[in-house]
Length: 179
Image (tube, rainbow, N blue to C red; front, side):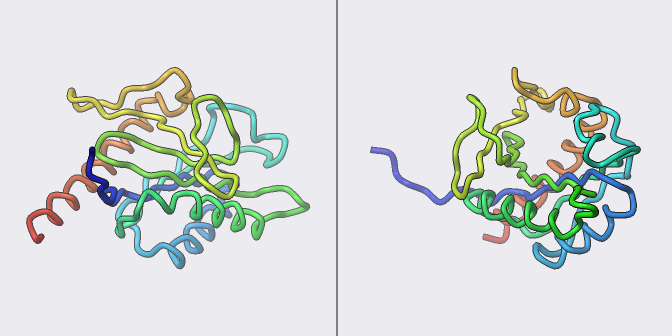
């Protein structure tokens, strides 16, 4: 019989997308809840889909962040519920101005949280699902899966996740060396 083990702590990441004026206030709010950041991407215009334009207008911008403090992957569903509630605080005329999507990086994968169920998503709790979006391969690259959103296949996103993964790998190495 396999021995049950506690999961290794993972790197909490978030993508924030929306009106430019709302991204920094949203980052301040999540920092108050989850602590210091150790990575922020440049802000860039979001052009991968027009899915959000009807609700949020255009142009839309996106930024990725990661948090210094590592988390248990078991908390992902609670974090997604928090970010969904936080989005409500930024409503204007009953429309979202910012979309905040949490996930985590482990050494082997990128996992994203969603309130939407699909065949490739696993139910966590509280109406929240998780999906493995990217798998990290031995050739030092993220592998896309059949359901990986096209934007997550882009060189820009891949570069960002590699940077965050390098920060996380350093943290894991340091934790192991200090016991």
